[in-house]
Image (cartoon, rainbow, N blue to C red; front, side, top):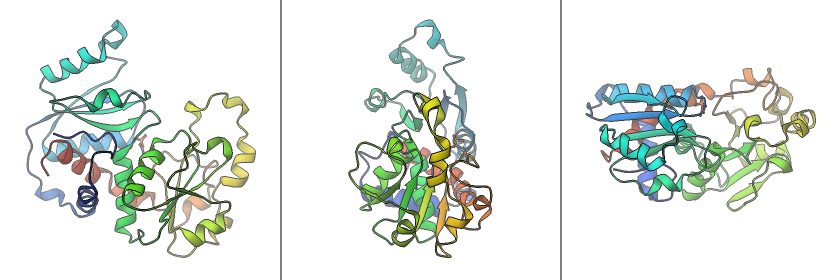
Length: 292
Ligand code: CP
């Protein structure tokens, strides 16, 4: 039994094995697993929730769903009693999306694997696996800085897990954003100051939306100034190489992080990321259940 809350206790050979499994898995050859997974999503989700559900069905894992809105949490229940209940019901894996940043509370749990499906601003490890597997699939991990993240890095769990995974695998991670959306800790990062510098030194970029729901004093955020400098447009993308790649974890906000015209460019390969959503969650369940 393993937790997949971040990459802290997973060694590099295991990470490389997981990434290779994601891009090579044969979904027709899966063995049926007699387990229960509980999907507890307290924030909205399309891709992560549905792909964890689809992956469970492909593995034969039975899925239950809940959220804070329909649980007894509002009656003052403690996390400990909630978890004891899950274990008592025979749940083997808890897949959780939450706005809370209390990931440490889950790390010491026994007899129940916990997978982060987006934990506050802290972690989204399966999205990071999916993104890095996409780079692996397209042979884009051959530079010191294979990818540059652009957008709301300060509040992004996609970025946090991406940098953790890439740094652990020995890569530096490029960053390009406004000062008010830049993370405080710059260890393992390389700050770029313009688009052409990124195109010369990276193989890819991952665009991130501005997380309006997590920005205090949103009314003071100057979207006009931000998009002028950090929105990817066709004019900017014209300067990138033909094999340069643009990633996005989705949901995409056209007109903020990317313009309508750039979103139609063949180098914007979010559809390739979507193809790996189910394989990534299959591999995540297998890891969490200690099956490989
Ligand atoms: N990338 C991602 O986490 O998408 P959802 O919010 O739709 O799950």
